[in-house]
Length: 359
Image (cartoon, rainbow, N blue to C red; front, side):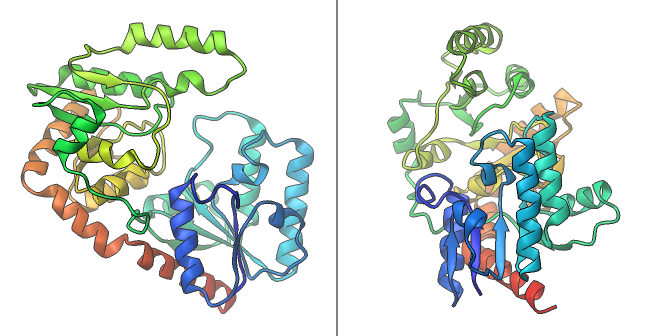
């Protein structure tokens, strides 16, 4: 098969480990050509059997899509389909995160309605899509989010990780990884943390203030927002490390290894890559009962919480600590190694391609 991943060719090695590891494993298993590029998607005359879109925003290199750009995308997808190319879309998000922009929403609609197949990362996504498009004729596959077993990660000890990160010792560490996207997520976590009746609790939140710095065009406004959020949400420094900035892939293992449990802070999202990442690092997870996130947590015996009930967040975190002490982290890791390894997920993806091409 000739396969084209629609993603940045030059930065795939460093930017998105999900894309990189899946692409490289499909490339290894596929006897034909497997490529990764955005410009090729737009301009190549080569016939591809499969064009695989992961994130619709990447088609426009994360820039705002214009009306002209959206029209061009419609024409390009129709052109590819007429050539016999099958368009595959992995549904990471139902809509762009917390977005009300009409052009970005239309971008998603174009991809969802013109693709030939959708890969869902859980059954919830499939049901959600069928509710949104009850008359759709898309071919659906449910293939889980893989773990990062082929990315060369090491597993430093908790003691070494705490030392490397300069964290206080003797704490029970709750990790919330990734950017907090709005004040709702910040409020969810800080309120639950303050109510949590666990001695020596410690919140490790390296992306807590990242939503203050989404754009570089308004530095004064960013700084004012940052200062305001610190006054509102800052916890005592002996109980928390709340920061902003990105975490390099080389430093990532220290954060997950330092933690006792992982808390998924998302309020309105379909998936979270932090669930398979936490499983990979042998951690118990507490997360929202919504979306594919809740589906995978329930299936594996991890606690979930009701986003409308703050007390349930506290209960889920307490339960995650109890389960971690009872070996839940090891059970999560064993489940992930068996069902979510990259080889298995890549093989299932290639099988989906073959089914499309040979119905």
